[in-house]
Image (cartoon, rainbow, N blue to C red):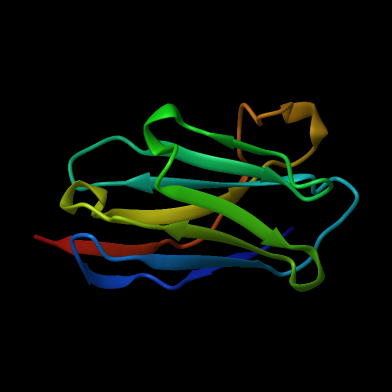
Length: 124
């Protein structure tokens, strides 16, 4: 079972940037994609972006396009989320996740492994 560990969250002023990292403990032939999600207080978890390990294809939620960029470093088994022009409404716990196999499709319709999350707080 893959373990995911996020890092890079913190407190930033509006307009600032942060880069989140998600390190996977291992990868197997079934590990084909990773995704980022976020959950603000009192709100449902929402999808942010996904990326394929092979080829680097990306997919974004419409509301995340333009300010957020997902990338990966295959050699480090690490996925990143670069967040620019941050707004107070971006305040949330950010999670990375991985689907269990390619049967989840692209973009994955379900994720099976989750990290513990990293808090991002954007002050106005």
